[in-house]
Image (cartoon, rainbow, N blue to C red; front, side, top):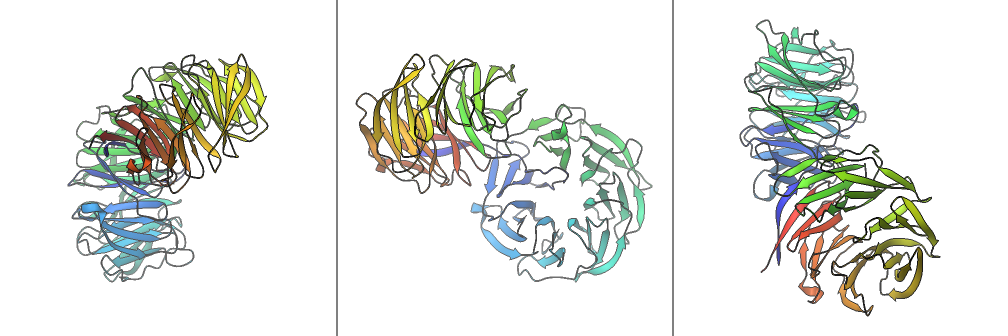
Length: 610
């Protein structure tokens, strides 16, 4: 078998309350560039399923930009490092420079692609630096700021200028190269969040948390106009983007709206249209980033919705894309529709993905509690979080019905449903297990050892419980009591996951000591051993529907697929499936594996016979 990546459902940009994010793009290839954690994501605006990821940064990435010719990308992270890499053949690294001593918030290329200016947090030293892209040597001296510099811009035409703005309410103007301080502008009364030159370089705009936008002359930095305050933003303005012809400007704000402004002859901005927020108007709909590229107007909300409007037809409803922002910890596939995948991340978000189409909507629950583990059958989702409660949520097309919660008294760490009678559920806690029927607790059983994983057979007649000591305890279930039948010893570390095969003739278990074992259920003998090919703990395990393959996902970023009737040496490994570790795995059919992980991605792999 050879695995091939057929689809990748992207994470959304990392956002932070009270801060803007600066997304960018490349107008030749119509790509969008944004960051999440240590990944830089390159997404095509024409086809959002066309996604590439660059994951070579050692620290969380803050901003990335295409060079003017579209051949290179410069990306910067919280440690003050800038990496410059090629957009083709495997993202070859051209250079890496340590630019600032703190986090970098913005960077821009000069129009000739030879210089880069970066700004951010300086820890008492310089907050801005411009350098040659090939040698890293500094060009110019940037004094005049006393606090973090949030944004910088390069004048796109000669004579070159650099402008910067930041948390000291200042806008500074530098001439060069080599660049030196020319003057300081004090027109804003709060943080200045974003600064951008118009495409022809004749003017630049600053937007600020004081809800205003001011327009300056590009050559002399004289104030020449402002964005009209009637119908203006009612909250901090976080970002702006010019239209390609320089006649209009897009702004986004904490008041949850995006506005398109027309530049008049006297250099003032007149409101042309206000674009609606993506959701119902909660905090998550605050808009924090924007981009105007060719005919696309892109806005990003705090909750991670990417809305793509058409600039030539602003009344048309936008294309909405979303996904996870945090580690995706569990995956579930519904039997009734195997093309549908549900994924959940611990921040309480459940997303529906449709194979071939991608994002299929978020499942809105009335109770947005955190999710630690998730199990699903056709009509219902069962989840447990960090609040000692188990939630049973009825599932109707894309909405959830009224959830019912069961308090089980201590924190759940694993959950399993009897698939043939799904109202029966087994939940494990540190001290033992709890059996639930519907929303009632049948029994709470203290097993006398520390429990780390559990599973219940589809007909509800047998349970297997894994312990901190690496032993598997098999119980038969009668009524609401468990009777211990056998103890299986093989694992050398705490058990992390146990799963029955779909035909219930076998079960597989994985441990924190990187080993997986397949057992025969009837004889309780080991059927496949020496599955020791991960280099870190096993987080998740899944069977193919025909019970011939077992897939394991691990903290070592790999997915390994074993065939049950062949020796483990003939395994198939997907290296680097998820940056930071694989946390969820499932099969949708005999030759399709879906995995999810720390990088907030969900990926679909196709297994083709050799």
